[in-house]
Image (cartoon, rainbow over all chains, first blue to last red; front, side):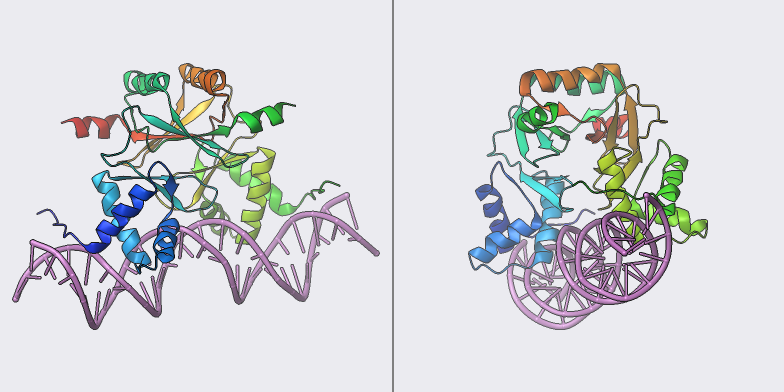
Length: 140
Length: 140
DNA sequence: CTAAGTGCAAAATGTTTGCATACTT
DNA sequence: AAGTATGCAAACATTTTGCACTTAG
């Protein structure tokens, strides 16, 4: 008795927005602003409700960065380069978000699985710390 | 011209609360509830303002778990066992938060530093994924 | 006495929900 | 027609802020 999903204009609009924001992260508010600028009316409730569906479908990833208390989203559709698992590094000092693609980090997933039975979700996981610049500054 | 910090009764109260919650994570609301139950009046604004100071001082760590949209805190004072860097694993399915102490994971920090110049903050970083139970269930 | 902290209530966010209306199938 | 989605406004939840008052130094 699973719920059916109707195809709507708003869904397509959102998808086009995600693609425009490809490889960047964005909040619900960013999406609203995107359409506001284009003079396309779309309700904030619709954005939130559709986001939830896109997340369930795996089209969009959701995670929290903390600084604002807004959820962040990132498009992860099929036409997105995601061969290499990509991680997020977030600088706690300057706030920069670094997208890191590193094969070595895949070992991390293997380790967590082998030793701790934990299936890592690399997309959603955010590494907090200090970026190169801020770390260097802190060490002076 | 740095700012002086006065010692107040509320600070001590908060500290005692943190110690009572040692090795558990809690939200601002949890702190308020803790004092409410003890019939100790303390303003929510004070809690938030003091939290900020404790976080700056490193007495308390702050991070986001996402499910509720509330910040989570965890006491990390000197009288806390933190010899081994401890990580948080958060199950995206059942919501369980696992405290993981693992020496092997310290290599992760070394790798991020050596290869990417990034200083990892293990306390704040949360690994998302599926715990043993939920992961096994998903693989059936 | 002065700087800093407190508590309240109000405002500012960010997100969810109820409900009448509109769109999909 | 039946079921789902939309948009608005209201409700909620979390956090921040302005201001008069108290407290620590």
